[in-house]
Image 1: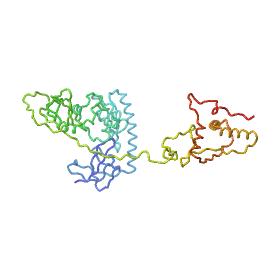
Image 2 (image 1 turned 180 degrees about the vertical axis):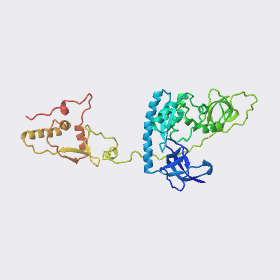
Image 3 (image 1 turned 180 degrees about the horizontal axis):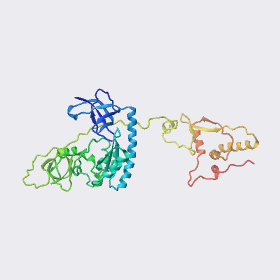
Image 4 (image 1 turned 90 degrees about the vertical axis):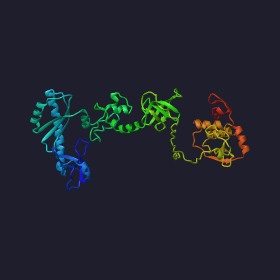
Length: 429
């Protein structure tokens, strides 16, 4: 076992092992390491840990030191130099008329080397460009041509799935992807649907390829001759994800049926003739999926509560009461008896007020109480302060008589005006 730390350089997902020597380095710390290109600034992604000797590539390079504040300032200065170098290089490319696209610029930690990454359709003669850049920066200049997949990894972006590119997030190396994988997974062969932003086949086609290949080993191919629990037939379609196949039975060719892979006995895999194939009399057992009933407690959405509103049980009448302005029969007390509303009148301040109060009292006695209350709600009655209401219980018979006296004939077409209940208040003479 060898004790190492894992570090990652800027703009990359791949990790490299380095010898920490006698240093205790934690994840997230910046370190200065020695590479084949010289001293570099890197970040530790995994602290001191042991790995197998076979995983270490010899010779194992060592960590120089843990990065200091001065090292961080040097790295920030190099980042600013990279931005200036990118702008200057683009200007020089246009001056020389080269067909190349500049992707990225990296400056070494000691500042003695500047690396330019670019893409191009073919070979580019950039010897004059290198001379101009070397005269401007007074450093070693290196131009490196990369592919479109490397360009997408450096620049980053969002794929058609809405997530960041896999190559710029966690992939260490690019995996080979072929159009055969799309055929195996029964995907559309339209290049716009199975290609990434870089224009190449999507790397995610490789993720499920092993699972599809394993499932296809247990499933028959199309047009295979199989034996099912309902008899022999030919396979017309295969669902790899559900591991089910659609079979057209010889006895019922008009109604194909679907069977699980364990229900099929493959007599001939793929296209071919049935000559010489012995059909066994024994049929496979039918696949029965065990249903697991899971009881999910349903939370109570509306809890029981009590209100002060009258209910049929509280009213004692066994039915619904009418509520609102037009209810009949008066109020009921707690014993089920009806109650009559009486109005206590104040002493009038003048003779005119006294005459009006007396008129209203007579109207209540003669059955015009409802009209009097409607005029009072409408604001056309007395504008004095509201009067206190007293409720006194009476017998059921007297309550029924008063309800009959106050009974209002039913009508249609809006509120009735005129008559006893709809007339205007009389003026005192």
